[in-house]
Length: 447
Image (tube, rainbow, N blue to C red; front, side, top):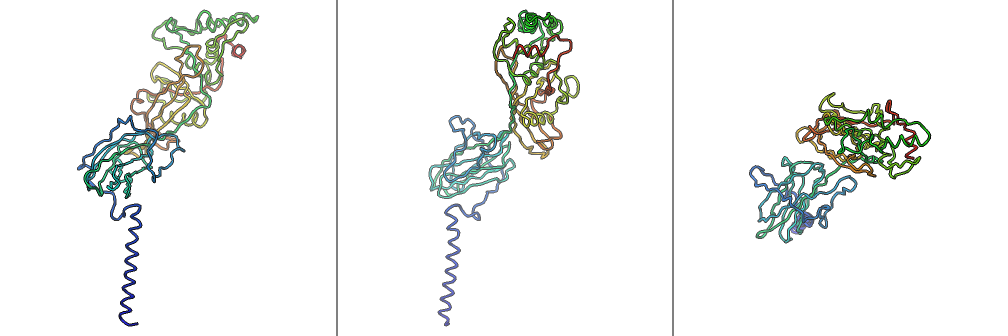
């Protein structure tokens, strides 16, 4: 081979290699810019002007992120929760400029989605996102589009930041950013919802009517039913008047809330008036008799906490509160009863549903903060009410150890002074000692 031909072959080989090498980044550039050229920008956050997004977003869609064509969002439908729109920002940026924005992710946040858009696709903007410590958590820098989007699938309650960077811009470019958070909830619900009923106060005052001992009330009707059936007067009205009545205003909260709670859990709800042995029993009469029948129901080991003033003012402890809800309402799908008042007065309500949000502690990895909303069945209804009227109370606390079987915890926020005093669940109906009311006779009336 002569020297000219050899030199020609070498030149052809070098040219082929150059063409191959230069073609690689050109192919990649059809989708994204080279990561060698583009990487998250490092900066000192204390030197940057950081603005908060606008949270007055009533005109923005709230049913989930607006997903641009070509982007993929991890499906969250398999998890209890919802996308919550957090807000937006509008800005104008020049070539090489960066602008920084902050937003607060709410309790229960497990994902965030940040969507940047502008009108001129020939201009190139980039989007970078950061956690509460300014660690990079994601970035998007496509070419030949007018949008960038970043989804963070490991988000939590904290202040988060994002950066809009003008990578290649002619003149000024206005932009708009929307931010969503996926809030995950952990829910439990009883299969049977207890029914609402009256709490049948002891206090003999017209403002506290009706009472079980009233003339033509449930107990007197029960006595008349027994007499009309050929029996002797059992004296249940007289007994109730002597044992479950007070004229002392300081005890005006005395009543049958615990007995109604037990009855509403263990008994089917009376829903219609009926006449038996010539006696007309309204729904309230039937519910009142069932309530009295469950006045002394046992709980066995199904009792958590101590009634005030016994025990620690902080019990029931949050870890026990948490585990009872998970076990009974969550796993067993059965309601429990809570005294929602932690001082001397007792106000029992059946708890039939909960929804929990978990948030990590940013300084102590052994702690998990919990926001728990409990749905209670109310006794603040007309005595003839049929159905279940409910209300919610939200409690906050932190747990130590695993969330399914925590070993410790403390109440937080308003819940330090407003948390359940004790929790319990009735095992079965048990006759109140000395009360002449007979459970089987009551069941005959109702059934």
